Structure formats: structure tokens, C-alpha cells
Length: 166
Image 1 (tube, rainbow, N blue to C red):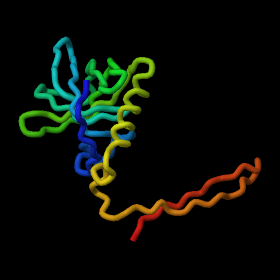
Image 2: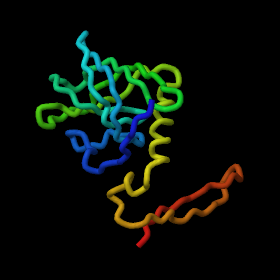
Image 3: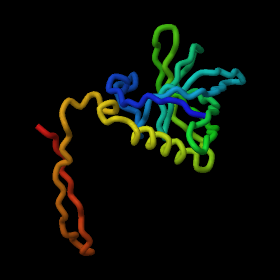
Image 4: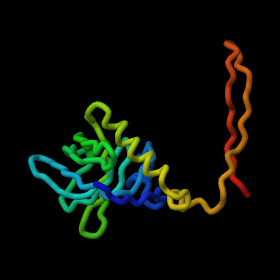
């Protein structure tokens, strides 16, 4: 089964209500059907944003920070990996009549986090760089790297200084 994915890292959907960025892994925008259950009530919706550490989705139900959902979804691809886990609500904000919910993933089965990371990595690899990084207005410069001698064990230490093209 083939699904098309829109890949982008959006700078305008970043910080939580307290102004602190909660994201810790690369993420992509997508449209993956998910079953989200809370207190015996099941909500069918789509994941709109996914990373190896969390997901975002829109729900019409009243949601509180700290609530834990049961999540079940299938990652598209050659192996169609099925993921069942818990989603801890870390952010919630009103968008029209719905709420945009950010969840941290927990209790993933063996290999599930790696499957999600691989799915995100493949999507980012196949994306056009300009679509991924819309906020970059100029070409990037990889900077400079120098190899320093290690102090005690004679192992080399790589020191990298990032830079931006002018």
C-alpha cells in the first residue's frame, strides 16, 4: 500500500505553551491513520506529524496535559510495521474547533522506535532539501573540522566549527 507523504520541518509549529522546545528527534509531516484510545473511548484520526520520540494529531475531545492514550498505527513501506504504544500528552493547543495534541511515545514494542526512525529517515532522504528547510535562505556551509591529538590516550579528537555561507 503506497501513501504519499509531505515532508517538512516547520519553524512555526515548534515550542510548547511555556515557550520551550520539546522536540528531540527529526520529524516529518504525514497523514497516517491512528486509533487513539483514552479511558475506553476510541478516537479515529490521523497522525499529522511523527518522529521517533513523538507524534502530533488533531482531536475534537477535551484533552488534558499528562493524559496517556493507547495508540495503534501502521507505518507504510515495504515491511508495513505495526506500532502499538502509549502516548503521553505533552502539549495541547486549540486550532479552530479541534485541539492539536503533541504526544511523547512510550512502551514501544521491540524495534518499534527504530522502525519509526527509519521511516522518518527514508522520508527525509527522499525529500528535496528546500522543502525540508524552508527557513534557510542561503546555502549552508559545512564549516571546518580539524583533528586534534588526544591528551591522555593518544586518540584523535575531531573539533568541528559550524559555519554559514554568505
